Amino acid sequence: MKKVSSVVTATILSMSLLTVMAGAAIAPALDIIHQHFASSQLFLVQLIVSIPAIFIIITNLFFLPISRRFGSRIIAIAGLLLYIVSGAGCYFVDSVSAMLVMRALLGVSVGLIMPLSTGLLSYYFPPEEQARLMGLSAAMNQMGGVVATLLAGMLATIEWNDAFLVYLLGAVALFMVVRWLPDEHLGSSNKRGKAFHPRQLLKFHPSVVGMLLLMTIFFVFPTNFAIITSRQLGLSTIHITVIMVGLDVVAFFAGLVFGTLMKHFRKAIKYFAPLAFLAGYLCYAVAETIAPVIIGSVLIGLANGVGVPYLLTIASIKAGRNAATTVMPLLSAALYLGQFLSPILVVPLSRLLFGSACVEAPYFVAVLFSIVFLAQVFFTRQFQSLPPEK
Image (cartoon, rainbow, N blue to C red; front, top):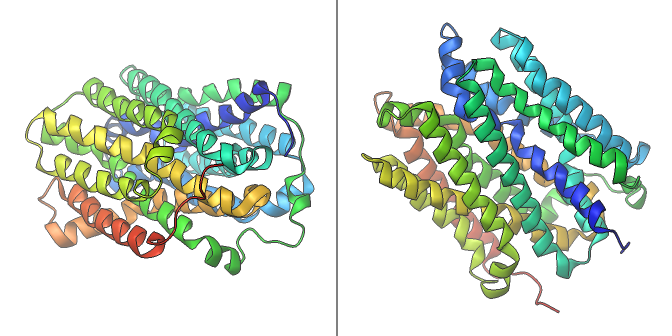
């Protein structure tokens, strides 16, 4: 393992601050955006949040050949430049179709950044340090969500399109990458491997399928919360933004203490995310006052804050130094495929199972998916745990 300075570690983690912003950052503004594009279908407006995911997946398919041709520094700079231009560029467009094109380009940018933000940690650090660092990476991801969600919600109250200016935050990470990130040729250590070879999927399927389920469940929250809660309890955009930011804060602190949690609950922690999701969405579904909504948000924040670094940690330890070009693109693809599929699956299932009149139907569907997630964890990880501490 190469010894790296704290400033290089901070530079890698700065990219983790940005990846969650691809979709969830503008979620608090979704109701205002929908009002502006009142003539457009709700599904198309929801795609503004989720469509980056499919282009992240497509980009991940080509990450290994890209990493063979270009160094990590060049890839990161290109990804961050595109991130800033396509993210903030939505400020200047005034049609859903044009916005979806810009959001697709944003997905390409995150598809370049995401494998580096976690894969470089596996490249530089030994397995015994990865639980702490993956937790820290997830915490930084959530902190990006806190800052971006809060700013987007506040900006959206001025003008609907001001919310997209939050993507200018990418300039901070761009400066750090240009100044401090080394130029590693990650693909050179994996000359024969293929990031999406079926054997790789078979090898890492517990983590990949787990990430797909986790994100499908979690993304019920950003794509539905603002709209449902405003109708369910009549909360304003500011109140909704505060609750959504609070969820990210909870996930942030869960990521910070993830390394400690792993030390004390190494066998049981794999069940935490599906159980917390199940309880959290049940609170949302039955909420008649704000109290169950707050409790549900805490539980869902904990589920996301623990579940993501857990899956990243066990996969990166299993993959070793090749994680950036093998399992991390797979996990990135699964993560964003879950985000993309979430509204596509949840909306029709909600209507089919609970009827169009049931406002809380997406939450009940999330409960059902949480049960599936719990079963997946039980049957694929029943006899599997992290290697013992050294």
